[in-house]
Length: 472
Image (tube, rainbow, N blue to C red):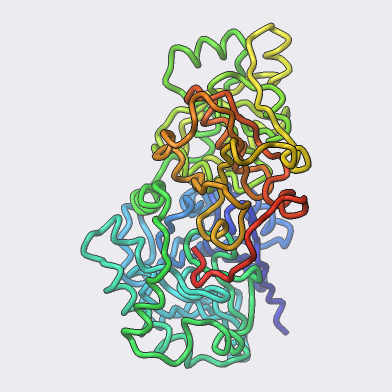
């Protein structure tokens, strides 16, 4: 009798799903994150040995933990066809099978998101197929964007990969049985797709009915549909791909260098003499009250890694951390998940130690949506820093849209003398914007702490909701 188990290990801040499979004392990990100890602990709890680390493709949105996991456990690293990294792997052939304690994992080569993209079919001891681990080939409600590889290899155009994806889906995935469970690599919020569901698993049969990319259409129609509405990928994506191909420094070594506690005096010296970015990972409400001048706020309580990767252009940027006490290592790990490995220290004792040492602090004025009602909006500009699609759906009448990821290109639009207001959806992104504006010399503004969520519930006039034609 089979003791087979499969677990989805979902990490919400980067909308990522890894998978743990175990059968009869042998385990496999699919698409692991950079920090590998949780997978080792999970296998140890089952008295299982990790035999394989399977990769569905060279990831762009995170640095995979396959190298550290293989080094620590002796597990073999398996990629599908066409994978040629700078380290030892098993390059599987289309249709090849791997045994896991009597359980079978079958390789299905499904190029399209990338050329090495592979789906893994799960088959039990009775030859019953029951699931597919699809990587970025098939999501719930979407498919992997085919435009990323061209940023690493120019010849792999988005049109060429989209056509590969069309055939992979129709010739490799859709002929499979409807009852199979689809286990994708990402869910809603990931930049690897454009309209992923908040659900993280589904049956293949339901996806055939509901997923726009699996409907009856010509190859040209598919290409047009898949490529329409894609946003510019974050700048760290190509860098992460190269790290996953070429290899990278062990996370243990990265953390050892990062765990340098600095007194306020030491912190000030390093911050002044280096070109390090001071990154404050506290909650927006706490950051607003007091922070180190010129520091940037990206709170751990939101889409931290995504915004770090979007707003800090160089993954080699040296970083000094200000965190809540006890959150230092978590901040370092979450930076390294996307290849930001150059943390050089942190403020020991956090912001309280800084103020106790009588060093200067700054603050951001925050107002409630109720207080915004008393502002003369005919004379005061309001900047909405949500995505264009959010703004187009519904916004405060008269507001100006400057999406957060474009703010550095539109600084000239913010008044230098007159007071202005900024807001996002709920206060997280607007505090990132506030810290950037403060860093650039602006101080004459207020942030709406509840964001548009509060504005919608207030007495302020907003546009009527119009369903957007595309989800950007």
